[in-house]
Amino acid sequence: MEYLSASFLLPLVILCVSLALIFRNYRYRSISPKLPLGRKGWPIIGETLEYAMASKSGNPDKFTTDRMSKYSPDVFRTSLLGENFAVFCGPSGNKFLFSSENKYVSAWWPRSVRETLHFPSDYSRKGERLDFLNEFLKPEALQDYIPIMDSMAKEHLHSDWSPYKEVKVFPLSKKHTFGLACRLFLNIEDPEHVTRLENPFNLLTEGIISLPLNLPGTAFNRAVKAGEVIHEEVLAIIRQRKMELLENKGSAQVDLLSRMLLVTDENGGGIEEEKETAARITGLFIASRDTTSAAITFVLNYLAEFPHVYDEILKEQMQIAKSKGSDELLNWDDIRKMKYSWNVVRETMRLTPPCQGAYREVTTDFTYAGFTIPKGWKTFSTVNSTHKNPKYFPDPEKFDPWRFEGKGPEPYTYLPFGGGPRMCSGKEYARLQILTFIHNAVIKFKFKKVNPSEKISYGLTPIPENGLPLLLDPPEN
View (spheres, rainbow, N blue to C red):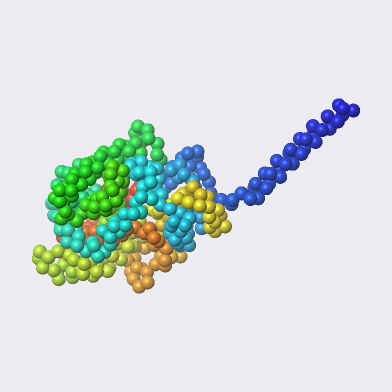
C-alpha cells in the first residue's frame, strides 16, 4: 500500500509543479511589456553592419523605410552599436521624442563618441550649466562675427581655389570650416598650428560613430588614438589661456574658449572642469567642421547640377555685392537678404541631410503607439522617415528650393537641426557660415561637375566618393 501511494504521489507532484510553471509563464506573458516590433540581429553587433552597409551604399533611408514597412510606421526596434534602440518615425514620433526631454528621455551619446572625445562620466548633466554657449551662438552675438566669416571665406577662395581650374570641394570646405572654428573658438590664426590641430580630426571623424571594438586596425581604435592627441592639445591650449586670463593678457579676447573658462572659473574650475571643457570644445569642432562642410559641399554640388538654380542664386548674391563698397564686408542686413540662397541650403539639407538623426536615452518606462519603451533603451529620431516622404514633400526627389516659401514644411517633418528644447544651438552659426561662403563662391566661380554620377556614402556626414571635384569658370554676369 505504501508503495502504491508513493507511485501515485510522484506523478501528482510533477503535475502540480508543471501546472504552476505553466500558470506562472502565462501570467508573466500576460503582464510583460509589449516591446516594439523588430529584430535584435547578431549578438553584440546587432544590425550595425546592415545599417553601415546601407549607409556606405548611399541609401541609409532604406534601412529605416524597410523596417517601417515591415514592422510599424510609428516605431520599430533594432540593435545598433551594442545598444537596444527604439527608432521613432514620422512627425508624430519626432514631436513626441523632442518634446519628452527630461521627462522620458535625456541626452545620450554612443560609447564610441564618449570615449573618443573623452567625455567625463557626468558630462551631459554637468554640461547643462553652460548656458552661456547659447548666448555665444545666438543671432545677436554672431552678428559681430559675420565680417570675420566673410574675410576668411574670401582669403580661402583666393589661396586654395583661384589658382586652379579644378578643385575637390569636400576636403577644401572642411579646411575652411575648421580654420574658421579655430579663429572663433580658440583665437588661433597661425596656419601651422591650425594644420597640426586638424590632422588628427580626420582619423577621429572616421571612427567616432562605430562599433566600439578597440582592436588594432579598427576605425574605433584609430579614432581613440586621435582623440587622445586632440584632447592633450586642447588641454594645453586651455591651460595656456587660463594663465593669460589670470595675467589679464587675454582679457580682451572674445573667443568661445575664453568665455567658457571665465564661467567655469567662477564655479571653482579645476582639472575635471578642464577635461570637460576640452571635450566640449572638441565636440563643437566636429559639429562645426563636418556637418557645415557637408552642407557647403552639397550646395555646390546642386548648383553645378542645376544651372537655373545657380543663375537665381547668383542674381541674388550679385545684387548684394553691387550694393557694397569695394572693401566693405558682409553684415547682418546682407544675410537677411539671402532668402532664396537659404532656401537652396534648406533644400540641400532635406535631400542630403548633414546628420541622420538624434540620440536619446530612456530614463523611465513609457508607452508610445501601443508599445512599451523600457528604461535604459536608446532612442533615435531619424530624418529619413520624413525628408523624402511624398506625403510631406511632394515629388520628394526633385530639387526645388521654392518648396520652402510661405509656411514651408509641416512641423517636425524637416529636421536637419533636430527640434524641441535641445535643437542644435549651432543652427545660426551654421547658417551664417554657409551663406557667407556661398556668397563669395558664386560671385567668383561657376561650377561644372567632373563626374556627374559620383557616388555618395554616409558616415558621420554624407561623403562624396571622390571629394566632389568641380571645374571652375568665371560667372557670366
